[in-house]
Image (cartoon, rainbow, N blue to C red; front, side):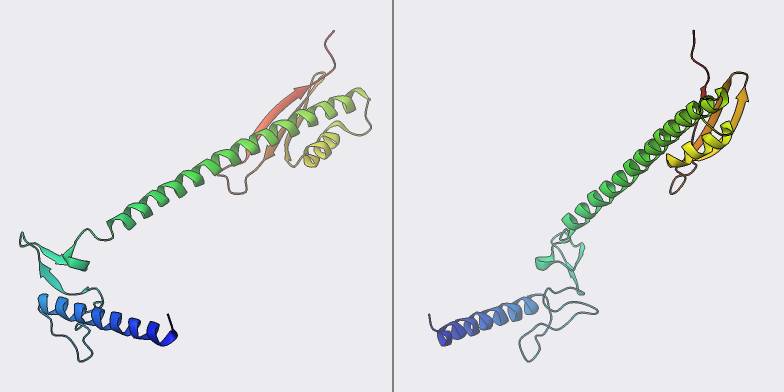
Length: 180
């Protein structure tokens, strides 16, 4: 097909579309404009007849739908609703995962800090037990929330998380000399 023939075919199709729009606007009680496009309704879209009010077979007011279909676009609303629910579930799940990760970080840091502090208390590692516990806890990505000697044992409390969580996760661990 040559270019001029293709252009002529498009012009014929364009004329058919224009005639169809003109007939539709007359059926809906609107006068076509000079170029054959239907007159715009108040705040409406001339291509689809939106913005005008029509009466359906039951006498109910219909608006903004091709061929007067009031359900047009309801699939879009349903898809948006499903997507919003999915986003909510993903957001909630990510919060639960973040809280669990923070709890595991606090647990690991507290247990390692307690072991290191117990070793320092027994003289197996250099330094003051709570200072050693602080270094170990911070090296594991947590904060030292408490450190105390309880007889032969060392009790260490570590906090982790807090960023984006309602409260930080805490874990308390206790370590001492080996049992005999």
